[in-house]
Length: 111
Length: 351
Ligand code: SF4
Ligand code: SF4
Image (cartoon, rainbow over all chains, first blue to last red; front, side):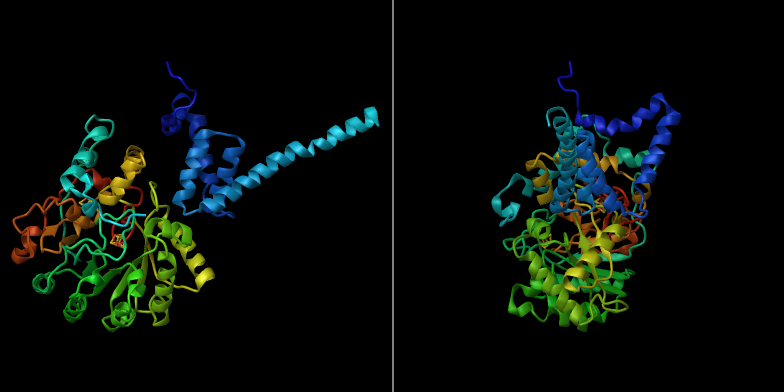
């Protein structure tokens, strides 16, 4: 029996998703590939955003893929870590900013 | 960071037959991955054949002032294989006879060959269209006797091609050794100062980028843009083209892949990135590589793997361009390094 939910080898099989629904699968991959093309943002910037988001959603496949992609693009580990801190700050900030709700409630009930 | 060659360390991997065994066993033997031969057969490109000779690449010796982690030559200060002046004289005959339009001197650090300058002077007289010297840049700052190399290159209209693994100090020094970045920057500034690499200048200065670890190079045009911007913004440096080169799994890079447990994943990524369109333009189809002792090889990689050309003409003493044209190229799994993505050669992408 497989002992873990995630297998690194599964990342390579991502494309097979289309096999069970060709239409939606190919629409998704077309969209995906278009998203990462150079536009108002460079491919490099998009790769860093993807890396940061990967950590926010804690997807091991994405982390694997976009760490590799960043290295290929010559992105340094300092840049990668800064991008992660942006994700982390937003994530932490999102927790903390809800503290205002908590404070409102406490003030109302027990002010 | 290495200080000695694998050969000096007495490593198993200094032996080409051991490397070839690794490249043929394991995942390629048990059918997990197709061999290069099977892969190119899918598109009827086997056997790979040499076309008209365009580039002569001469390796004038494996001695180098650096010991880069990923060197496919396993070069270093301890390597003693150096081309003699007699062999150079034979090479000159070949250069004169051959129809090649490009002469490409490599090493090790070619400048460390005691007859290097003599050879450049003589070869420049032959009037070849593009005369390349692969200079590692730090050699120019390594010792006073090399300080005038930029002027020497200029005098003979040499096209300088130099390695630069990254535009940051950290990544460069990790691969090539402490202090390499600063010396390389200084050398590039000196080359710029006498006209090398400047916009519109005939003094060609190109850079070679190869990844500092077990990953493939990114898009060449995008990398060039990033390199140009960073080197200009930070140091005011100009250069012409950037060649993005894939590291081939041989010699010290193979050793690194195995030691870091990246070998299988790396081979997977090469095979996954296989591009059949790159096959017809791999550099062995128009290049001949000559070793320090005058033997002929399909490329510098095959030279290091001691896989001689499959032809009756195997040494510069019996060089015969007609016999060599159309020869079957000798291949193994390292060839996947030349066909990944946009393809890779000493001149960068091939598609
Ligand atoms: S990669 Fe080039 S500079 Fe580095 S050790 Fe090898 S030959 Fe010398
Ligand atoms: S490694 Fe050499 S022989 Fe193999 S494809 Fe590349 S250039 Fe040709």
